[in-house]
Structures are given as structure tokens and as C-alpha cells.
Length: 293
Ligand code: ATP
Ligand code: MG
Image (cartoon, rainbow, N blue to C red; front, side, top):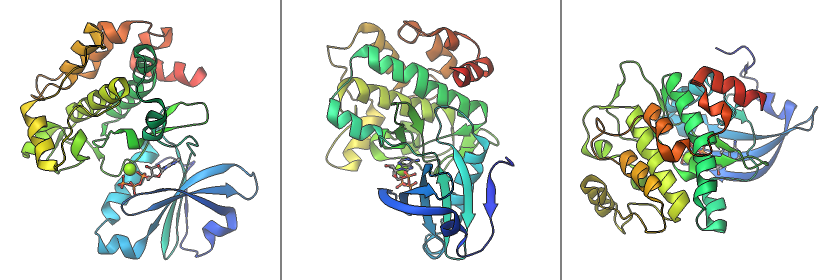
């Protein structure tokens, strides 16, 4: 456990003694997220507030414990940082780095779709480097989607919401996870599957969205969306370059065993174009270089 993350005791006012709660910035299925200002330093954080009673009813304690455990494990410039957990008799407060520009859906709604050069930068330097780091730490996110990619004030992507993530023990999972439009085919089919290919699939859907402004698999009903996903029915618009079409089709490969893996994504010609020097290094050095820049 990281010693820099304090675990507050069960004192009811522990949070209020230290922070001034602010505006509502997001609502999750079982939580609300607000800004919070550190009374002493005036630094602004995002705080995810979970109510014990509701979690017990929804059997969410385990999920929250896992999210905390995972966030404590991860330190990366493109992953939301957890600073403090304050557990009071009624509520749990997760004090996190504040991504003030909100999530990528908001940004994409304003922009529509991105030119390939800009999409490549976000994909290469931010999304893949963050996901690759998670996998090195044996963490699979499993719910990669635009809503869970936040932007800080300098428009850097921060991967958030590790609520359905898992730490790989034997490398296999069987629980359903994620959001319908982003579900990988093996998740829809059920049974056991490996974790990392699910995140590659999620990154493929995200890359498609960045370039096209829509999801690759959409339908009115979830079951029709699932059918399109399992049948592999989607179109690659003609404005996309042949290189990126090739990469997307390899990431959205229906068979998880044939799906491209992250080391091969790194070697792909579309990924390699305009690759910043620090990303040409193997992963551990990459992280140090990102930290320095
Ligand atoms: P769900 O399971 O329904 O996706 P959740 O309870 O796990 O939700 P999050 O997805 O972590 O909650 O957060 C909900 C929303 O709050 C996010 O979509 C985002 O808009 C906002 N949010 C969360 N964390 C931050 C943060 N660190 N900075 C800024 N906004 C945030
Ligand atoms: Mg979420």
C-alpha cells in the first residue's frame, strides 16, 4: 500500500475538517462526484462520495474496495491519481486529482470528430501509454469508454473509473462488464476470457469514435447492438487513411486470440508515424520520460 495515501479514521467530521465541498461535477450509478477545496492549501480536488448504506444494499462494498486498491497501485501521468480515502460512519470519500475539462464525450460533442493527427497524439501518447501501464501492473480496466477518459486543464487525458476493473490473478475473467456499445464480443458471448484484449477492443472503439464522431456499433436496442458486435458489422468511412483503417480492424477483431496486442499496436505504421522520442523506449523508461516532460 502506498504510504502517501492516508486512510481517514471513522470520525464523522474528518472530511469536513479538511475540505470545503463544492459543485456537483458528475453522477455515477452509485456515487456522486463533487469538487472539494483543501481548506489549508486551497487546492481543488474531485471527490467521489459513496454512501455506505446504499453500497450495502447494492452489494457494492467489494467493487469500491477494489477500485480503491487499484487506484492506490497506479501512478501514471495519464491515470487519475487518488490522494486520500476518508472513511466515515456514513460515507466514503475518495479524494482524487481534478480533471477540470470533464470527460471526452463533452469535448467530442463540441468538436465532432478529430483530424487523424490529433487523434493519433491522444491515442499514442495518452490512451495507449496509460492502458499499457495498467497492464504492466496487471490491472485490466474493462470499462474503457469516452465517459471514463477525463481531461485536465491542459487537455491531457486521464483514465478514470476503475470500478469494474480487476487485478489479473490467473489472467482470466468471467464477469460481465463495461457499457453496451463498448462490449467486446467475448464479453457478450460469456464464458472465460482474457483481460487485456478487452481493453484493446475498448481502445479500438474509442479510436473509431475520435476519428468518426460516432460509435462503430450502434442500434436502438441493446440486443441489436450486441448482434452487430458479435457479427462484426461496422463501416470504416472513406475519409480514414488506409493505415488507420488497418489498425482499427485489427483492434476490432472479433476473435480475442487474433486481436492485435499492445506491443504490436506500438509497432503499427499508423502508431509509429510522428512518434515522440520518449515513446520509442521500452515501457519502464517511457514512464520515467513522461514524468520528466
Ligand atoms: P459509473 O459506474 O456509473 O460509470 P461511477 O460511480 O464509477 O460511475 P465515475 O465514472 O468515476 O463514477 O464518475 C462519474 C462522473 O464524474 C464521470 O463521468 C465524470 O464526469 C465525473 N468525474 C469523476 N471523477 C472525476 C475527476 N477526477 N475529475 C473530474 N470529473 C470527474
Ligand atoms: Mg463512469
